[in-house]
Image 1: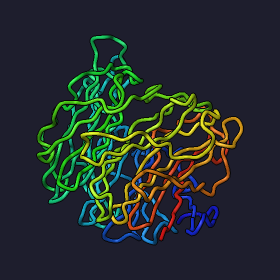
Image 2: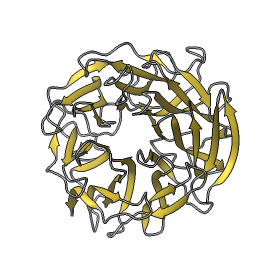
Image 3: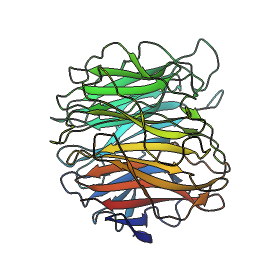
Amino acid sequence: MGLALAPAIAASQAQRVVRISPPDASSPSEVSVAINPKSPDNVVAVSLQPTGPTTNFAYISFDAGRSWESVAGPNPESRTQGDDAVVFDEHGGALWSYISFTGLREERPTGASNGIFVNRSTDGGRSWSEPVPVIDHHNTVRPFEDKPFLAAGAAGRVYVAWTRFSTYGSSDPAETSHIFFSLSEDGGRSFAMPFRVSDSAGDAVDSDGTLEGVVPAVGIDGEVYLVWSGPEGLVFDVSTDGGWTFGPDRVVAPHPGGWDVDVDGLSRANGMPVTGVDRSDGLNRGSLYVNWVDDRNGDLDVFVMRSSDKGKSFGEPVRVHDDPVGNGAAQFLTWMAVDAVDGSINVVFYDRAGLDGTNTGVTLARSTDGGAHFDTFPISIDPFETTTASFFGDYIGIDAVAGRVICAFTHFTGSNRLALSAASFRFN
């Protein structure tokens, strides 16, 4: 069961914040969340939680986020898991992707493997299928598959995109990173052979020169959009044949400071792009949005830009928060959800505006005019101090359906102690 932290009223909509990880959870982090479009009271979050034989867990709610229970994910080979992401398909089935590996960062491991897997659930997250490989390498961590994200389209199509390192973490100029892609036409029960999407390589360091942060989004005519970050900036590519082929890469925006950002009190943070499409019947139907963090103003800010012509052109980036520009306050680790019913753009991020030192809050920004303007809604938790002594993770989570918005996030509850909580909003 969840532990209610603080109910609040933000403008005209109720907000509820609830602890979703159990009290004895071991440092959960890297959370993703999805609302079931067929039954919006059903919410599933997934995260890294290094406990027992598995390191990934699902947290499920059937009462719109008022209470939660945790379910251990399958891990038949007891590998290390991480980079969890979850979506629902059009029929209300949940799909959970993640990496799974052994032997990474060991010069001569006794056992090595790495891959990307997807679990399926048809009962709202109560139970999960055995892992289905998108790709799986045995007795090697070269190449290494990293940071997969997925999207569900029509007619059982599931799309997964990620970064492939020829050798993870290598500074050798001969080693590279590329964006790879795979698709399923049977609801995630099997996946086609992966292929390379990126035309130009990045380095393999796992920093600003590396190609990272690719989140697929599905257009209203079945297009598959990809945006990632690398040494050239934010790079765009699109498939017009359902994910079988992609066109030439195109740099669509600079990424000042790169995606590997420095935040006091954290061992690492990122400003990687997140991609979404307005699939509603509203005025902005079909619009493509990209959300990211950069330091063009001298400190870390959160931005969204829009394309209304399927990625042929993009408008100027819009800063989603209204604290003074260049005030030194960091906003970081953002994620975005575009509501498929009302067309709103919902962005969540960690926020240090008005706070001292490493004290950190969480903020929701929301636009109902196609990303031209955003209103902000601070999430009702006490600011928490961060520390480099605990792994904070690379992700924050959000989803939105018909004005219901769920934000899921990692936060410190004490010295070196982490928990996951979720904030639930209802907008008219």
